[in-house]
Amino acid sequence: MSAHLTTGLIYVGAAFFEIAGSFAFWGWLRLAKPVWWLIPGTLSLILFAYLLTRIDTEFAGRAFAAYGGVYIAASLVWLKLVEGRTPDRWDAIGAAICLVGAAVIIFAPRGN
Image 1 (cartoon, rainbow, N blue to C red):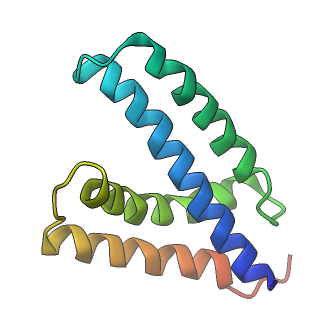
Image 2 (image 1 turned 90 degrees about the vertical axis):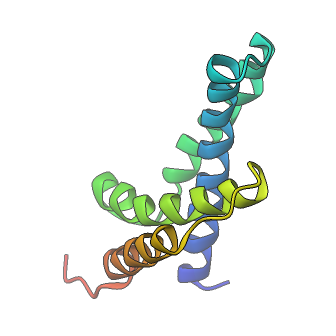
Image 3 (image 1 turned 90 degrees about the horizontal axis):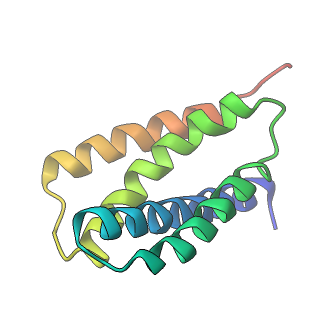
């Protein structure tokens, strides 16, 4: 498996776990879900943090910056698939801009 594909899969997995974990807290606090929702939510957030440490880069800040674009796009997928709301064109345009920014950070040739 190529390094770029591995990086992409790690970012997608991290986004899923961060959004799922955060949504568990959202559900508990905003949707009156039971407090036990925090157990899988916390585990999801731990998996998210672990996955980001698997990114092959020398600097955490660079891994986190590139992840931001993936997170934004994944959040809109969550909006559609889990919350049943279709993102509008502005959501899609914004996510595309963010993914381009993430790609620049991930794929830029570096001498360091």
